[in-house]
Image 1 (cartoon, each protein chain N blue to C red):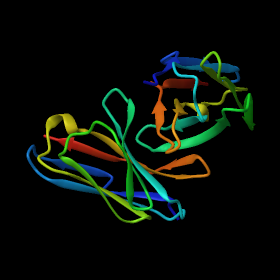
Image 2: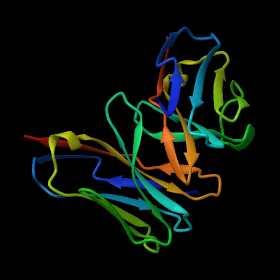
Image 3: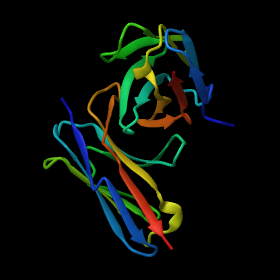
Length: 110
Length: 112
């Protein structure tokens, strides 16, 4: 059983499109995150939710909107995709101060 | 603003060598520090977590130390193996919401 699962694993799309990445965790954790890893492999936090409430919102364009329907899910919706959005997006959940990461979703914007 | 730096950026060693990866951070007011491993095209695997009150943690051939006052952590890998080849990331937790600030990573290659 995968603890933190993300779909899709790969996503190729055109500029201007809207896309979503889904994340689910079966660890029973209350807190979930979205991180972005750019082409230089640098990981940066984007959002964090605790029990469906937004607790961290870094300087991210309004085109990015996280949604947490329940504490086991944290989805990321991106509007009007731009070339610079190409990256690997990682979902994570936290339990006992340890973060467990998903395998990542590689987004390529053409 | 917390900044985390890892040195070296890349390292190649022959199998069997002991090695040290370095991590430094600018704000010593941390809750904990975590070392991760990332294999190409894969997610991150947590290796060791050191609380701010601890000096070191060990897991198998891995030993991580923390000197909070000087803003440094090291990851020691004993008797390296080709399977240890990966990128190693350190991440510092500076908030109650576990907002991790990641380092730039050290790409390790262990050769036969």
